[in-house]
Image 1 (cartoon, rainbow, N blue to C red):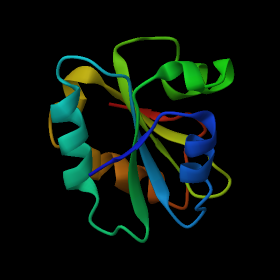
Image 2: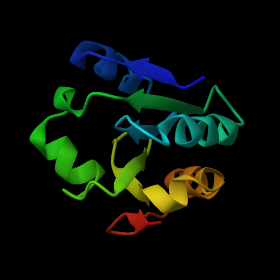
Image 3: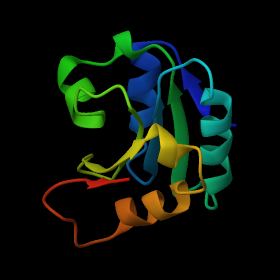
Length: 120
């Protein structure tokens, strides 16, 4: 199950493992149980990948909110690369309800990274 973080320190702890690509699910409400389940199914290698559910977006900094879901509430997930942590993919609600997360994690793990995140 995705690690649920409810405090800033818990989020910092989740992001501290620089060996893992992080799939962040952002928000709560109708449909999020399915989105989190899809994220969980995408985690094939727990030592190298993790799903983290941030239900309360108030624990994010304004910069994180802008980076993770460019100020658009239709973005409900993003993938962060290993160190240095950078957003490599942003996922919209319709895409998050499909099995797109495996592709998203693959994009986040690629060595050659595009200058802007891939948007799904």
